[in-house]
Amino acid sequence: MISKERIAEDYKAIQDEICAALEITDGKAHFEEELWEREGGGGGRTRIIQNGNIFEKGGVNFSAVHGQLPHSVKKALNVEQDDFFATGISIVIHPNHPMVPIIHMNIRYFEMPSSFKTGQQPVRWFGGGIDLTPHYVIEEDARYFHGHLKSVCDGFYHDFYHRFKLWADDYFFIKHRNETRGIGGIFYDRLTASDELSWEQVFEFSKALGRSFAPIYSELVNRNRNKDFTEDQQLWQYQRRSRYAEFNLVYDAGTRFGLETNGRIESILMSLPPTAKWVYNYQPLPGSEEEKTLSLLKKGINWA
Image 1 (tube, helix red, strand yellow):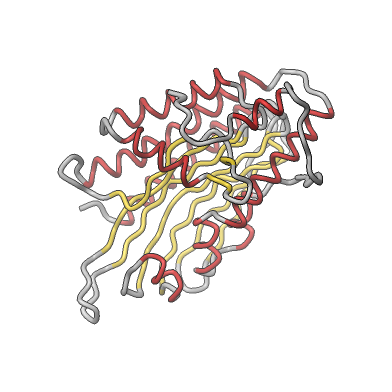
Image 2 (cartoon, helix red, strand yellow):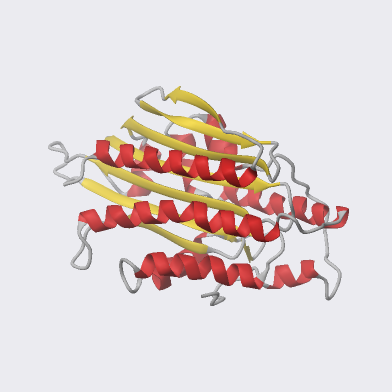
């Protein structure tokens, strides 16, 4: 059985690889690292990049925490044990260019030991996902993004992409706006060994998804970074960022888990954009690219 220490070390290596690739892509900014410890057990490495050629603000964070679960989290997870261990990488990048999309990725592992007191068996699973939030939906880029994710999924199990794409459509949905956060991607949770995949294969899938981030995003950045844009297009970018902030503060499970387990606030909220606008009752012009983008922020689009 793979140890939690090995999982954490491999995730740290992936964090290093992604940070190095993003610095090359930006060409100017470098990550600043802050090591932190969590009261209650564990800690992490927060790495922030900002004010670069293309990355206005971004984070590639690693954490490995342990301790006692709050009652609210135990209830949400439907478990009886108190002790837990969780490790993962969380990434959000906000570019300064409205034609370059916001991207988010998370890979994570969670376990709880067996409990003699409750008689509950050990609990362990992997979760994660990656999704894209374009300020302007460029259909060719959307097909590239989903096609790459499908190839990663197909390398492990034929049904992964279909299942996890539908899951992402449902998860990254802003209910109060009746729109998706972006063009989705894949999302999964509580993935364990099964008749189809060994525990080692599930872990390898988690790592393969993590290592897909740098080539996918570098390609999308380089396709769009040199395009001209107007002040109105940047205003639209700030408007779309506000929707991103609304989702993360209202619905995101990772944000809630971090806050409820006494995580580091700066690391948890690094996902928020540096600048966003809430223009009252903003309505895009009929026939505009902004209106087209809104029409594509819905579930069930087959991009792959």
